[in-house]
Image (cartoon, rainbow, N blue to C red; front, side, top):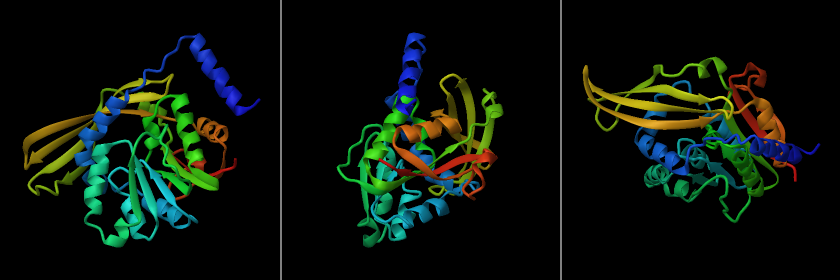
Length: 287
């Protein structure tokens, strides 16, 4: 049976049973990125476990043509890619993140700035009027779309923006089902000195507030608390919604949108995908 037919039957069954995905709205996503943007760069500079940059730099430098980074954010990966000599377009949903990126690009050398074009929009329906040799979707932007229809729309749109034989590289976390059982428990994840005020220490925590197991979506909050010495100064909160994917689900989405998997890994150290840590894919457009 054709893959698309399978998706159509699933959607029909869902409608018949009147099961509705309670997906976050675009407004909620804008509010999340707007509230977290000011902490984003410093938080992920402090994250010593984040090791995706060498992988995505190597993939981009090996592309034989133009590159598009979907979910480029504030340029954590895009700027080093442009510095490495790659012509790259950046695309993001959040105007707040793109504003930070534009400010950072203004401090780069002219030849780096000239390699970059930026676009704002939605990965489900953007149209840039050009095709690429490589599209990267690093650091899980795909987990900010929440229904099968929207996920398939995004993958189809990536395919539309790739040359035949072009490649798609992306990663998703492998769901930790034991951890997803835990709600209402706050965990401190990161700590850093505020670069704008060296007297401040910022501590980021996360609390998962609910999990929709049927639709594979969880809700939570990032909590940013600032301290001067032992004295509490302020607290900011960012509401987060994320979807999670199973491995077979990813394979179905790729096949349904005309991709074949070239490489798959369970970490950015290229461990087998069966280690079930991260899901890292490089796929090729076939049709």
